[in-house]
Image (cartoon, rainbow, N blue to C red; front, side):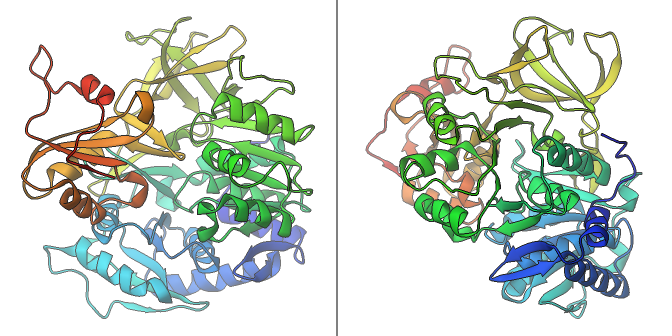
Length: 521
């Protein structure tokens, strides 16, 4: 793969518009855009953004439901030189406001039906200050609208290179109760996009099924790998995700040839969607990421795919994808599954608690082209990476993933869980301390602990609270501050939380505990 250091994400779109102007680029909401049409519209919108005062390096949030307007907003912001952050309109306004403040977002791009929510989030982000000029907003073409969230004088200082020329921000759950903005440069995302397009063999004839929210890192493949290949990105309506049978039907109706999703969606299609009976005839390559694939459903899925390649892609948002493996034909549930070897341009190693390479279990570290620039918090950039010496003796700027694993002599990595309070649920990384912080912030709660359950409720998230509030009141309060994906599966109120011999909350005991009468789902 050629050097990607100077490639811009919007240039991937422009290049395909030059090569394949009449090819379909995007299908959404019943309409298909050609590459020429999409690129020309992005140009127009980028000029309008510049006229509205958006300058290179500004931080722009795209607050619109997944659809044409959101895709246009992302590309137009990138072409205007902005650092672009997709935002989820389903998140509570208070959480969106945390993202706007934390990342230093000065402008929101929104669609007409999301404008009221954008105004509410902008007002929440400005509180308790005077807020932006209420007249600092205006319409753009193609259903988009711009809205300033910060007064001109309060724009954050420019980010250091390369983000001073734009970039991409995705948010992750943070232990402080505030989402962390993961700042990726154009080159970080483009390196992955070009690698993935090549590895999965995308061409201009492919139709890539995009099922994930645009705030989820899987969609960097859907948008930018697709653009790199000149293929067509087909956006799946959000409402279908909850209905596996409809997803299977949509894959067939839309003639999807490439599909990238979390294991829980594949499992749903296997168990409730009738995938075995109605396998999509057009599908030629599939991939999964975001969480471990349970062994027996994975074996069953592999058997249905036959000769169709199935890729296991791994990487936290901070590195996008950093390792990959094509699941071997004939693999069975009795075998251990590997997350594979490092993608080209990255180096992956496993280090012990002293920061030295180990052949046993340790923490997975990643260095290379896909490693992010740092976190945007309180409007400023902090870089958590550090220089470590890998087993080849070379010191590198590396990100500690928090994932535990082991590495073989031939470079294959095997996951062994987490070393902190983070869990994966339906592909989303959730810090249990983030949820716990939200519980503690509610009225009539004096103490709380949030745990991932073992036993019969394995994988569920339960919140335990010392509170005079009822479990129903606590859950109702959480709905106002947490997105649906982060809500606990059950809330349990108690007179006191158990403690261990050191006087700390005994989270292990809570993980193993069964339900009590004062609980709500």
